Amino acid sequence: METITRTEEMLLLAACRLGDDAYGADIRAEIEAVTGRRYSVGGVYVLLYRLVRMGLRVSVEGAPRAKGWGLPRRRYRVTSAVFAALRAARDLHEAMWARLPELAWKRLGLSLSGLGLSR
Image (cartoon, rainbow, N blue to C red; front, side, top):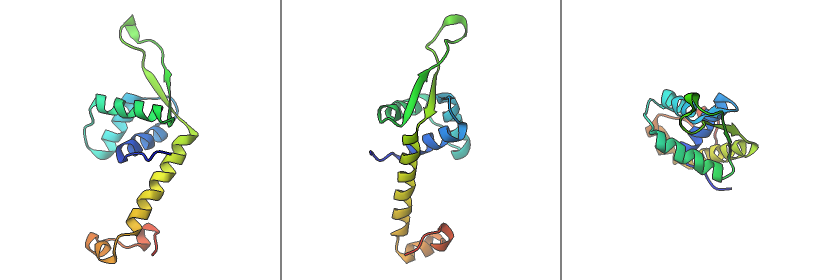
């Protein structure tokens, strides 16, 4: 399985929180609300399409827009592969954090026990 980026991880977590049939705009609004950062529409959709190609999302064409203009909205459904990718990403992050030297933990003001990690 291909490793997902941190931003892709945030998109997938937002989609999981929103549930099946989330629209890209909903996913974008969710990560903006949590991070306090602005994400371009194009940037979000490029990553969503990449996730679809990786088999991590199922894109379903929605109903036509009102007044008959514009492309139909696409809904994104969470697949079982999404949960596997998120577990793999979390395991990778925990492994990297666990490998920090103790001095780095002290400088960060953190403890291994606080994160449920051990050496």
